[in-house]
Length: 507
Image (cartoon, rainbow, N blue to C red):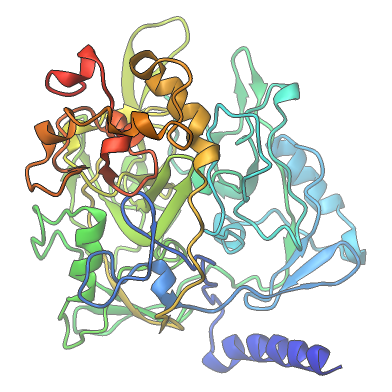
């Protein structure tokens, strides 16, 4: 009985918080409680140290749901009610039509959610699978599966396991992929917002999506900005206060751009508008100020209210564009962690079309997309584009800081997850097979751990007996593969060997 009373008390307090604060758009915490370097999980950093100030170190309004027992789930923070089961995939026209016909829970006012409504459900405790894998047993989706039914894409039906995109009613005002009409969706398998073509694709038909319908709180996602006249803007809907300008206006870092750890440090040390309690916003906080009615191709502006000042950039195609902004949130996947960013300009990709060897730079996912990038390293060491849509890799992005809201400092996190060497052994051995030969095993062949002794001294400029990412002089993707335990150092036991590596490292 005591547990039930306590649970009900917490639920009531959660519901009352937004009402007491006059918030129609409360931002729910991302659910990220672990800290990360630019690759691996780390212990909580202390103030003033590298990586301090990231998402997990600020405790926000915690996710809270109620299963109503009738196929519906109520979000106690946002006051939105959801259908629990997305059912089978639907085309966009089917999703619209079935919303008005939906009678789950006996309600008749279901609607297809906006991107801001649907994104309120994302949890960055999820892990992004390798898109080429067919295994999901060791993965965690980016949604609370205790309340919502979820399934990965089905390879047997021609899907990749990451094909679990959920549709919204938010339509991109421009087009993507060379003229295709586009809706914004949330992928709860890989933890991203992207623009997806919703019309017929030649030779492939119309794309299908999973759908969760929503009802109640029609004001959710609507901003109420107030210019404070001191270089800051407060959103009365969320309770957050923002810099009116971005890091570009202050010429911070490299012409306003920084890598992820620099962005964290800059935000934590910022003294602006008479305040020093600024922080790098988490993914949900930053997403709250995206304005999906605006985009470069239609309004000649960034996807943000014109009340804000945005530094314009020249993008990789030599065209006027607008920045990607870092968040404090890490995107954790099969290859380690990356930094979450939101594109306030075109979400560029370098696409190669079927039947052609030519690539074309274009807006592949739309202004307002949420993706992730490498957190550090020289951009020259990364490929310009990667992935099926050739996502542009920037490494250095801009910053817009935030303060206020429900964020409270959190100094201690859960016990660090043990590195699962066995889970990476097969991929590692496959990559190193040619140099190491069959049968190499870091755990069972200790005599072979010293075979890279000639490799490390070539790179080890600071004499610590290992090679850091900054010391490594080969392609970035090689560093990631050699860094077997993802601690941002190549140890002797991880180093490659053989003629192709011993003379100057991999190229």
